[in-house]
Image 1 (cartoon, one colour):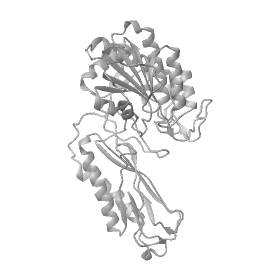
Image 2: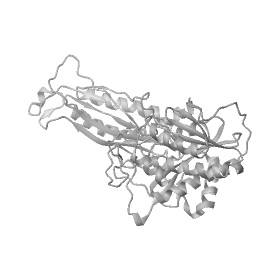
Image 3: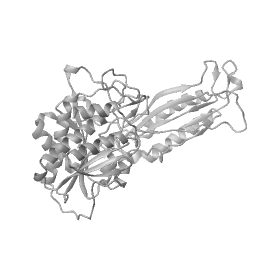
Image 4: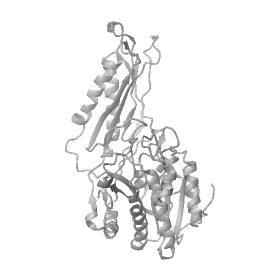
Length: 436
């Protein structure tokens, strides 16, 4: 597993571009004589171990990397400039292949079929949706997922049951310009009121969220834990200190997935200022998905309203087609005891912890909308290694001692589920190991 993880880490690929990673997975499955389907969801791979009959249970790993330059100097540092496995997906693939080996060696004991889901484009590409559309969950009764966690001790697991444009000019002559940066500054303040004045302060008894943090490329926004959070993490504008920019961009991270607004020049006015840009990067996250539509509406009202007050124009576009908004990741209540029992028997029940709500985003949620699913954190923190940087950091590191725990947990979650949750599901005719 360590060798596989290091090979993937050195050759990171972005969402829907995981061609070499997908090929490596298929080579490993071929060596273990495991049948699979490919491609599913562009670059995804779906393997099958067991009786090829019901019940079916799935275990999943994501494959994609982030647009980020790795700053960790080691022999297996990323060879692809501007790309890095900074969220542990290389480890996830390695652990799922490790689980596949365990399950294959005990295939005769399986009371059904384990489906191995190797998924592309978790980082904002909604790869899970494409995998579902491609049939990855066909006849599957439940799905389990793990994510390495820098903040959880090793051998432990944790879970929970607009662009504004104005008129540019010289800084010494503000009365001849319409300043969009001033408007943007007021947007920042006004957006904070959405949480303090528009959200129900008593709405804290919603279902819990487990997820990972999703960010835009190099922009880092700290982990946030709250029912609803709006954070401006970057504000950038103009090319010169003494020029009033004529436009600013307002790309957002809304509910953990990137979206943006587009610039619009003030009608009928020409401004001879080249490449002057003001940018705000924000994060909006919520646990109660019922607020989604209303909060999007409030975003629109605040941005366009503040632009109008300052004599600017604004357009708002959440780019939901390009970057779908991810729903909250909510564990299925009927799988919680299964998780606790399997992990407790393996690690000791004192090593199975409840996790606080988490404001990151994880597209495992799409699987959970389709079937019962359970997502948990796998610890890798070790005092001997010192503090491990958070995901989406260019200094992110993996404690490879955690890999065997992840492989064993994957295998046990699946095998015990087949044994304990027997159910009859009609099995249609299907062919495996086909290059679709």
